[in-house]
Structure formats: C-alpha cells, structure tokens
Figure 1 (cartoon, rainbow, N blue to C red):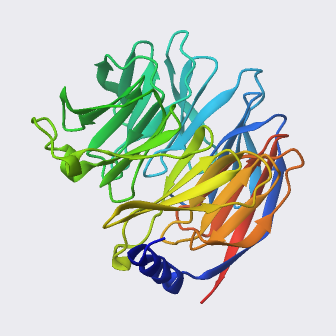
Figure 2 (figure 1 turned 90 degrees about the vertical axis):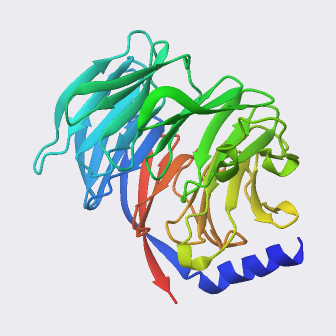
Length: 370
C-alpha cells in the first residue's frame, strides 16, 4: 500500500468511532430471508422471505404484512419519504403498500406479466419507482398513480440504480450499462460497454462514481465527471473507466463508503468475493487495494454504516464481522445457524439488521464511544 493511501486510511481511523453493537430484537420467518429494508422515517424495518411473507418491525414489535404464499419475494424498498413500501418477486407483480399511521394498506398492484421482479429502486428525491416489466424498465409515479415512462431496449436488467442525487438512472443489461437523464427520458445520457455481462451496480454516495461487478471476475469504475464527455473520439487514457482485477471468484456485492464531505477522502469501495472482502481506494497512482480475510464461508453482503468508516460483512459461515475503518475486525456477531443472507444499516446508523438462511431476523443497536 503506497504512502498516499496509507495517509488517507490513517485519516479514516482518526475520524472513526469505536462502535459496539448489542442485540435488540429477534424474529423468525418461515424461510430464507431474501430482502430487508429500513424506512427513512422512524424505526421501521421491512423483511421478506423465500416463502413470500413480508413482515414489519416497528420499534422492535413485529407485524405480519403478508402471510407466506409459496412464491418468493426478492425485492423490497421504502420510498425516500417513507410513505410507500414496494415489493416484488416470483409472482410477477409489484405491490405498493401505503404506510398509514396505524395499519399499512395495499394501495396498488402493478402486474408485470410473467416477469420475475427481482430489481426495483426508488428515486431518492421523489416517489418514482423503477422496476423491470416485460421487455422494458418502467418508471412509476406512486403519488399520482401513473406511468412516467417505459424505457425500451433494456429487457431483463441485471440491476437498476438511481444516482443518490436522483438525477440519473443506471440500468445494467447484458454487457452494457445504460445511463438515463431523469429530467429527459427521450434519449440515453451514456452507454458504458463492458468486457462481459454485469451482475450488480452501485453509485457512490456523492453520485460521482458508478461501480459495476462484471462476470469476467473484474469490477469497472466509471468516473461520471469524465463519462459525461466520453462520447467524443479519440479518448484519453485517463478518461477510460478503471478496471479492477485479481478477484478470486464471482463478485457478489459492492458497497461504497458513505463518509461525510468534511472527511475530504478519496472514494473507498468494498467488494465481496468468495470468502473475502477486498477494499479499494483511489490514489494518484490509480486504485490501490487490501484484503479483509476472516470469513470461513462465502461473503454474501457488505454495507458501510452511514457517515462512518465502519464496514459490516455477512457470510454463509454464520458470522457478521464489523471492520473498524474497513481495516481491522472490531466485533463478530452470530445468530444464524446456517449462515446469514443479507444485511442493512438504518439510515441514521443506529441499528444494523441482518437476515439468515433459516429465516432469522436480528437487529442490533449501536453504542458508540469516542
């Protein structure tokens, strides 16, 4: 690791708090936990399973939203204002729940034909929902109950992600990432051609970078400030997307560090691959990396605590590891006999929720010492 990267990491350590988490709640669903999502408003958590059930935890008290149906629910997300919860899965429908003060109610059901809905994402500035529908990606205005647009040529997307500022929508389709202007749907802003099909994409918290997991065991990183000018030829070498290589297996998850602007640090990316988490940080020489190696099973998910350098990783070995400043293990959590499947931090960073492969749902509260 070169000196500039070492100095940057020392800065992360200095700004980081020592976070310890304590178990606050535990529920059990009837099958593998497929998705979990925190509402941005209050202490409300939604969880879905492979059996099709959806449950809510409000202030750690459980409420059944949908009983098991036998058809998996694979996508779950709250709108930016907490007004809506969207779910999608094997039955080919999008269900929109309106989060009433007392009891949530189904407000709409959007039929997507025979399409298995496993990708949906809310715009972070308005109640526009993007999801795969047949041979298109549809943008739906939940407040107005109407279609905004249907984007053609993006059938069977591998992933769909709004930029954190809500200005752009990225869609991974086969070996291309299509980026659209949310204020003008008439044409694509940019098309990023990859060396192999993509499996997942992730925007950095400042919307400056877009990372893509690629099936050829690499990760591409697009600098959007440069990508806006890439339609011209010839291209300068420093304008090309960076390709991060050397991964031992499939890249399963990507997560950008969500650090406060005052930290003045280069972008940091966590990549889950096989039993490892590989960390990447941009430096004047390019992208430098280091490895976090403690898990004994496949790492299935990674997530940074908001406004912090604390990284959580979950794996099939039944461990959640908290990595202080994405460098050293500070705490190991257990509670899923046959391994964990997914995790999510509360938007405030006060709680960490994780789902297990036998239906376990656990929620930890953080206590932080300066």
